[in-house]
Image (cartoon, rainbow, N blue to C red):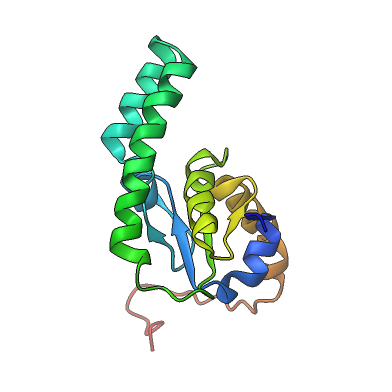
Length: 158
């Protein structure tokens, strides 16, 4: 059994079938936008993400990955303590991060090792957003539009 990677399109179609949708991005990324009903379990918080990015750029990707792994492991442990210990064996979460899958993949791997049927979105939030944007023309075509116009005070709101 492995962590199940699903396409953004499959995630859209089956979003309601998951017991939890977990956003592994930082608090600021989550606050900017997230999947409907998602909860935020940051693998790296805002400050940690900035620090690891700086190490990645100024020192080396390898050093950043080592330090990041230590922080991610500690954060995942806290999320398990706070949110997972009461979950039944058949709990089925969907996790995602921005695009690369490092943050959500780390979380998903640990959840999978516990024994949960865990899924991740291939391409993360970025792929999900792209898939939704691609559906807008079809969704908009199903709507009926009525143009309401007139001068202010003409009773349009009634």
